[in-house]
Length: 79
Image (cartoon, rainbow, N blue to C red; front, side, top):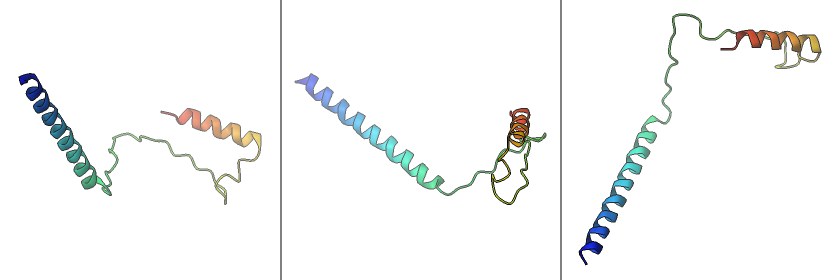
């Protein structure tokens, strides 16, 4: 009988602990919704920019030499 009582008490404590952790994490997530964290500023340029000059987003990438040139530029700029 004592084993059942201790086991049941531990089950209740475990359930309450789990629920409190869940509610805490949901409260923290609700607080952080909509917050925008600025990117970490680094002393050197972090990312190289690549500009594709065209009126459409990918309209100028129709021929193979342009694709090869863009692929080489992307490959050399990868971090």
